[in-house]
Image (cartoon, rainbow, N blue to C red):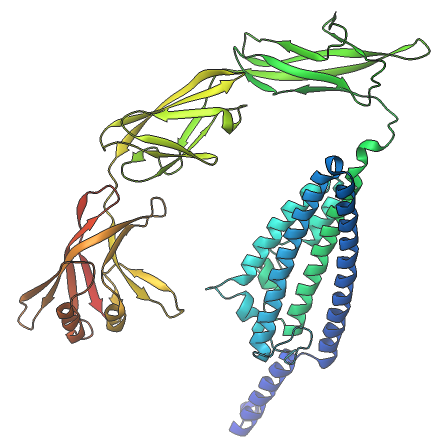
Length: 522
């Protein structure tokens, strides 16, 4: 009897199933009170953002006015303030565009982020921000990271800087019950109602405007930082460089902060006093290593007393050297531009010169160099010189092997379902329609390192009839001929044809015969 009483009728099973579905629907439904709350928070954030933006504009106007009155003193701070405003406006514009895209996904073309109709839509934010094909959420996270790192450079106060790092934090979040952390964008926009997602973006704008205000306020305060009274004196050593090469002079300026020009201090280093009025300590080291020196400044006062202010500094002497590295590989390839990084420790890039042997060329391009070596099989040497105190010093001579570019890979560009393109390289089934829509054969070195295109000059397709006889068709260019397209059109699912004798010319001018492709019709 117990077994019979536990057995459910089909009707009861259906009722239980409907209850489970209803419970799930109730769990997914967002209360209208919650949605109203988000709407009120969003409206409040908009008002707050307007107030903060007005305050920031007032601070910026003060900086601009001071720069106009005193360009020599205020121009540099004004230019920094302009850069801060541009960075903030750029990021806020990006967030405004994301708000519109999310609301438009939910409400259609007449979308208004300030008057959302489908407030409880749980899919629009995720579709817009977490789409793998166009990860706008990831792009926003990277933009916030760049803004945070940039804006904190203007804020020396460690407490304020830490606060901005916290409110603009985008690290992944490990939620309770999950084994792996969620990315910042997933935690913000996955399964979020539209009104909540827009409110979160408005909150982010509020944080950005706060950070902008702290940066502008710091810049404004720095304008008159040099005019404030000082209540202490300190000795400073200002070397031209703490790392110098053997055989080149070491130079350092030693000064007293807020020094009175009517009573210059005397400087004593290692028991020897510098000549009166001199504040430059200079000598030429003859050994490598790290060394220290110390001394004191003697400051006379009106009452006849003298105070001493000690100082200490160190310097490092190194052998003449340079760093030369190929950013692609430890070789140079003939026929293409090879990016080269050349640096000399302690020497600015503008004071470095370089040349190449072996019939090639080496040209400066910004902070890097572009090498085009001679013929393959030869050796090219890059010679580096540096301008050290007006003297050209040879610091390095680095040999490189010159090689021919490797053979490219042939492929057919086909369309993908998401509207993009893919490089089909054979040996896997592909829709006949995609092959017919393509223009023909292309070739390139696309290994993520060289990324060099080649020009296809000709190729041959090989089809097989029902008897197994090969039927070759030749194209004198990179496109399929009409006869080749007709042969492809006749192929049934599961059949295949081959693309052989592919001739391609690279930027080095050599003609290559590429490996054949097997095309399988799906």
